[in-house]
Image 1 (spheres, rainbow, N blue to C red):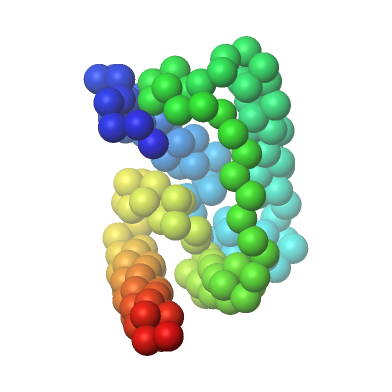
Image 2: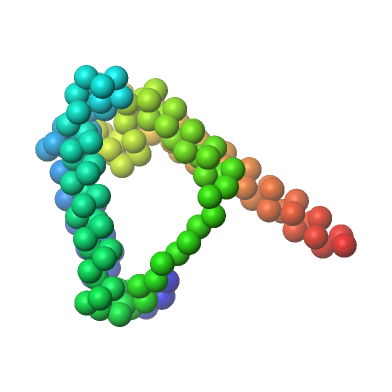
Length: 153
């Protein structure tokens, strides 16, 4: 990413987060019982919200590179970033899914849930921060070991 971003970059990110959180709260997707009802196939409102968001995102990802060569606020070129599908993706997806099922909330909606007055979601947020810290610690240790192993050759 470029270091000299437009001065409105951070305020627009903040406003986008507020709109996202408001949308989650308004659609009741920030309520864990709605998510748990979806996971038990009792309420199928969540897939409609998710598919609606996927359609809007898909259209944006398809059209924006044709309209502009670079992002308006960062001047970074639009490009496709391919990432490998490996063991880390599978383990991360499994941990994410189990956490989602246990807490009834995903990370983005957890903040919105806190904003609508669900104070008990702080337990889930604490678990997310602890998990993120543990993953970062594990990854930095494994990278340090890989660097030490290749440096010894």
